[in-house]
Length: 102
Image 1 (cartoon, rainbow, N blue to C red):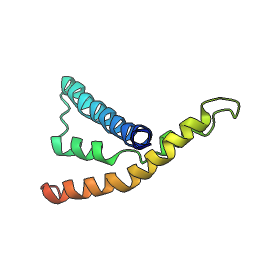
Image 2 (cartoon, rainbow, N blue to C red):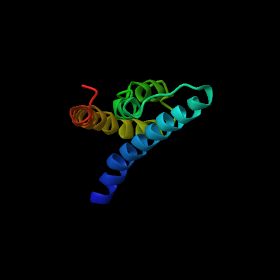
Image 3 (tube, helix red, strand yellow):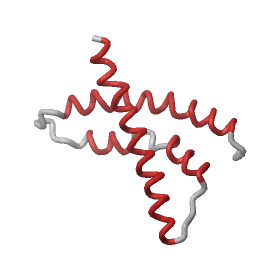
């Protein structure tokens, strides 16, 4: 049971944070080609900020009721959004307290 909860809740959150980091840091590296430099502190804030799950809900809820994996997607997204709403603000707050941005 413990492994199942980990796979359903914690693993998607880790994958989401990793994918955000790849997009933000990779995107800013790509922008350097065009001489656009985004400071590392801003990149960190973008990674910790996120979209708060609105995009995930907007993509899953319109799925047809006949789609066999709709319930699975919803059951993955709801805890992911809940963790995102609780953990990310705490992490972002800690980061802003330690950085010189505030």
